[in-house]
Image 1 (cartoon, one colour):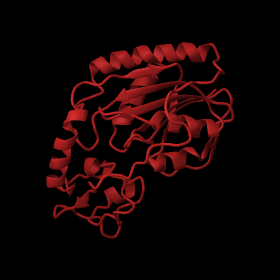
Image 2 (spheres, rainbow, N blue to C red):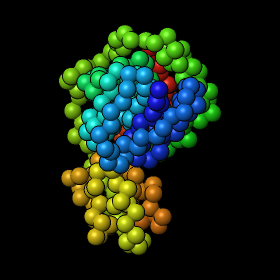
Image 3 (cartoon, rainbow, N blue to C red):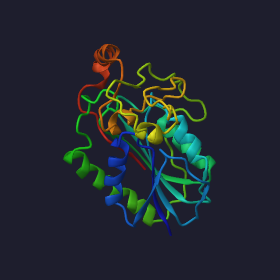
Length: 251
């Protein structure tokens, strides 16, 4: 039996939640990082996977869907984890379930969990925190109970299946500034190849998914978005991003 911690986490928030959850699950979980290109993977019926993705505008990031479709479940059990940045997850979990079931997984449980917003980091700042960790460990124990009984039923999730909300992306696209040394780290680590390796200041805007990974990893602080636009959008979003949102478990 293999155990796999499969996640798409450009800025680390989704990975932090996933790592807490695997602390509460039995087995040694092998990391599969969907931020990088993956080979085709065939799993087995006895395998267990925690599959974690962030919610981008209420959807699973398209590149994560593309890479998940390279993994064939063959009856492997999947625990779904949608990490949302203190707003909502909308069709993220149902899209993830539909994708995984289409790849031959048996979905046994699902979570919607909170992490610091990847663009407007003042919202849900520092989450998952100690309170979240205690709650997530408890949720993981309940999921493990379901895994232990060999659940093979149908996970029922409310929401849209097959037809999902349209997310057109955000106009906030990071570009390089004069601090750029040309090291190319951002180009190598961009999940979608949206940074020109020959000129890392240059962002290929039509490819960029605004995941903000390049800003977080740049050793020179040489990448940023339009701060005036960022401020206007943060002010507009504040009513729906404020407060302390909850973690949810669906079994």
